[in-house]
Image (tube, rainbow, N blue to C red; front, side, top):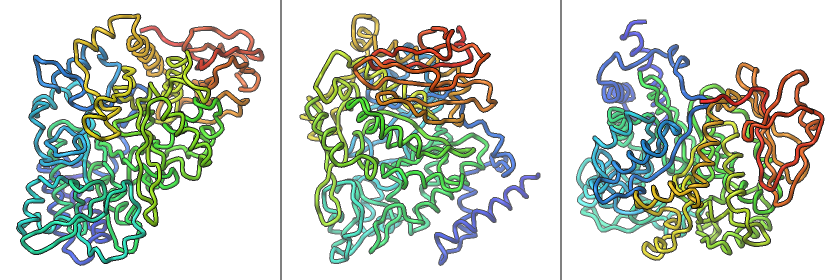
Length: 587
């Protein structure tokens, strides 16, 4: 197919999509503008039939989540320290790196962006980003819902100057905004005196983070330019921050609106047709049934965060009861071709509670909150309907969240923590590991006291020499967790049955055991991943998981072979087995 035919068909499809969003605008011209901005060279556009040939992911894909400033050294820029840490301590064990917002910002640790096209000079510059992107698949945040009050666009808004004067959502404070779903407890509208008079700007997350108005197609075009710039700098995976709140309408909840989904479909179309393999991940920290809608009809997000996993993992390992975790894995549908889940236990944010709504009974939630507070955690609140405040997330280092059970702290912290990681690594999807989980970082109380923000508890900055010394000392907890983690990852990466789209089935196991069956796409390998989520020994009856007679079976983690497929397998507290009919390979 020639270039002109490819461009013509793309233009036609794009115009139809834009017409759903902007029926009163010249969508033909807008499609022209998007194509010229995103594909300056026509040969960068691929025809629709070539999209399915792209290699999106496989079992070797593991992501690391980190701030650009997490690893510090006095002799180099933080992004250079991060790159050195990746090369010296991780090598190719990790193939994807998510660097949290690395742009100039005014608040929220990067999520109030001042300039989308610059790198924060305190971190480094674009050459540092490009260096990391040359060795790892790079994920970056597209902070698309809101921007900083210190940005040039917002200063234009205050001065009533183009283009910024039309880039923000405003509302009458007398309007009925009671239906709006809130992730925070501060007022929804922030008052500003502007050259055009008093204005009240929609501010979902804070008074410094002002929401963009995507009813204006020029706003969409600005972000098309931003995405194109990131692609040119080596970004290949785009985390769409807070995208569920993107489109606002009075007298609606202003979350998950149809127009928001249409914007994502449009961006998926744009990215799919690029010569490079570009991936959209939607960050939608909402109840699971709502989160799943962001797959669309295989035409929205390539990947959605499995937000229900962290709180339900905490609950299972805290209580020794995997019932609700099993319900999650049974209810999550298999991701269709071109889609998958991002599985994680912790991130720069807290452990969200909204995904537990309708899943965990309130009594179970309250029990978990009390335990996390007793382990040194904090609880952040949001404003619910009618102005009532409700718990929104648990702020705690995931390693500290694993320090005990409902009976209190015990000696099983490392074992319990590794059990959580083993479950996460085995699930359908791509695993994403927060750097502070990889390094078993404790709660950062000093950081909370310094910033006044609960989320700072899990956003510590680490000295390169100090953390390297701890990792080199086998007696430290950091070294024990790090080495165990990397060993598990290397085993996982060799197993075809752990492909992000390989079959997954939740096993019906006795209380205290959680297990899934994974089968490779070619159906040659099966893995039965079973974890004891209690602090007592448990017996796994191998007859219950139906190992196929005639195949040899091994536990991939311990290397133990299984002679009697009808026998019993004793699991120590928090032990995981990955029982496979294909032996682990030597490097």
